[in-house]
Length: 348
Ligand code: KG4
Ligand code: ZN
Image (cartoon, rainbow, N blue to C red; front, side):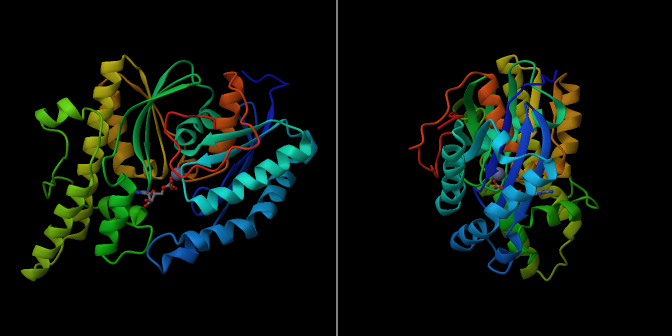
């Protein structure tokens, strides 16, 4: 329910290559603006931190102004400022954190340095309304694959990737295939026309003895190596690579492990709602499999639209609104950007 005097929160995201700014009133999203430097990195095959920091510096204030202008709001009306404190690239984070501190100080309003990974799940509240109880969050991106329980202001981590993140594995295999960076969306498109059962790729940490130690952890580096070897062998034998089948089988292996462990975690912890977020949750094979598997397990699924899965300001504004709603104290002005901020810490 919308309350007229819900706080107006300005959210600022600069953890990687997107400069995102958004305004929410409570969880109502008023405006979300993203300026991306991804094209400047494509020719390097990955993000170049220094290039990203400079792009944030150039885009930061214009993006704040565009957001306020499009929402028809004045800076003076902002009740609180939220900014990504971490995790992320330190130089990129510093641009957002410095901007947010200056704004909060000038306005005399509270500042919330919030967690990017948790924000990927909390953004769903700005699209589909506030959570009505604890949720299990599967956050999958280019840098993270985590299973979190979000219960109001409390966040607990059940598991995470021990090596590569899901998106990272896609990007690396895409590089072997000669696809442009980031390769995730390209592999997704190729996979739509392929047979997911064509090649049986390994599912790491799913055997019984591994499950005992790592019930909710993931590992995608072995899968990535197996897929790269498969391509190498095909090349050695001058076999033509059935790209669609290869992509579909690779995507199936990732989606299979992610969804199986999520269902097991939901059951074990008595949670009925799963939220999926992060850039990799744009993946159609994961979305399809999650819808089917979670539906069969009686779990309700919340997934934001694709534009709110990749990095954006709305996730940070929503995280600020969530912190305020649950009575968390604002950050002190001397908090620093934290490249490895713990996934259980919502506010710095
Ligand atoms: O959340 P995000 O924008 O940035 C990080 O915090 O990492 O996620 C970007 C990641 C990249 O690895 C990209 O390849 C992947 O998400 N990605 C996808 C898709 N869309 C984005 N991976 C697979 N299928 C997609 N449709
Ligand atoms: Zn992200």
